[in-house]
Every structure is written in structure tokens, then in C-alpha cells.
Length: 338
Image: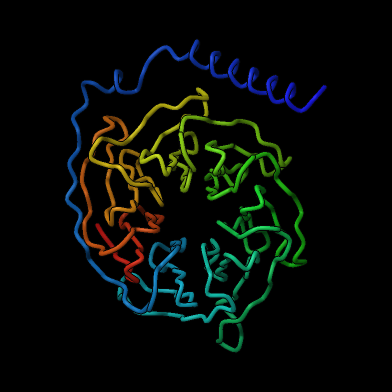
């Protein structure tokens, strides 16, 4: 069987799956929520975190809902106290081309990576009191786009080499390679139970993976351009994606369907980052137009626009207790909203 025939057969099977999904899609979320009132939000900037000297590319909250880590093109990883806006640690990086950072659930470690193809792990709780690299995980053949800790012993990474990987931090070895995307994997998000995760790719699809067996169990389509951002809802049953096609979409794992699309004629730029509120009623999305747009997930209407940055909003996140939103931007600042 030739390559063209196999490609045609794969396309036909994908179409079959799409048709089967359409058949069982008996209603639309927008119809079921017609009687619910749209919410309106008024969030204000409570703190501005000043310290980076160049574009902020990534941020991640600690599990304590107070601390966060940010990564910038100035070659620094900064750990912040969001209550006081003070820096707790400023960590110089070997490579300034950083694209992602993450905080371990224990609060003991942070990690980052980017165009150096490495995932660098830093210990914040050394006996000497200084922060140092404890491990550099090498194995990806492309840039590191995202990383997320499962625990102090395991971390998950995604890469421009089209794969995701699970690593044993203590040995520095890759324990599982998760292969299935046909383009760069740009983003990942861990499920609340820690057993599954979702990934978004330049192949315009998102996949649900089981960490225990390394298999992709579901694939979701709908976007027309690269998926840049992905985030689970706290219930572990829904997730949102943000794309260069200027839309965010919400998918439901149980029904295997796209259930919401968030966009409009007034928005024509790409999305860099997405995060749900604690309840899931609100979806925050960072855009190339310098704004963070806030969506009512049930009504698919915009609930607010957070205007405070002077360049692209490159990253955002809601803290664990759901009280605050942090946005990071190419203007070099991070802002805490609530």
C-alpha cells in the first residue's frame, strides 16, 4: 500500500469519526443555557510585579496560591511573593531563550526550558540557602514548549519535536515518550487527578493522554490554526484551548465533543494563554492585542476585557484557591488581578 493510499485511508477514517460525533451531538450548550443570565465582571489590578528587564514569556502559580514563578527573555527566572510583590529568588539561566516555567506542587522546585531543548530543574530549598540546578533533562530534539511537575520525582514536558515526555527527575532519564501529534506540541495541562493530561499542537488538534500507559485515548479537532494554549477545568472533564485562529474553544471529554467557541468579529488576533476560574464559569484568555479577554463559558459571551498591559499578554494563570489572576506580558511586567 502506497503512502498516498494510506493518507487517503487515514483521512477517510478521520471523517468517519467526525460524522459519528455529529450524529450523537443532540444539543448545543448555547441552547441549554438560554435562560441563564450573562455575568459581568469588574477585575482590578491589585499588584504589578516589576523586576524583569525584557519580555515575560511564562508564569506558573505555586500550590500555596501566594508564590509564583516567571520566566523572561532577560535570562532570569524570578520567584515572587504575590501578596507583597517582592522577589523571593532571582535565578540566572544558562540560556535566555526560555519559553516555559513551572512550580512543583511541593513548592521545593521550579523548572524551565526553551530553545536549549533542555528542561532545567532548580531546587529552591537547598541547605545552603542558594538556588541551584539539580538536573538538566536532555532528550528532546526540538525546543521545550511546556513543562509541568507531577511531583518532586516526575515531570512532564512537551516539545517542538512533536512529542511529549515523562521524566524521572532523580535519574534524569525519560521514562515514557508520548508520540502521536503531527506538528510541534505547544502546550500541555495536567488533569486534577494526575493520571491524564491534554496537549495542544500546531497540527490543530488536542489529545487526551493517559500517563500510566503512554497512550492518546482521544483526539479533538475544531481549530483552523496552531493551538498555543490549553487548560483543564477544575472538574477534570472539560478543557479549553486557545489558537492563532483567534478563537478559544471548550471541549467535553465525556461527550467527545467541542461544546463552546469563544470569539467574535472584534477579535482578529491570536491567543497565547488560557485559564479557567475555579468554578469553570469564566475563561480568561491572553491575546496578542495586549488584552486579556474574559469569557462567560456558558453564554459564550465576553464578560470583561482586562486592559493594563502595553504589549502582548504572553501568559496567565489563576491561583489554586481561585482568588487571583496573574497576567504576564512582553511589556516585562506581571499583574495580579481580582
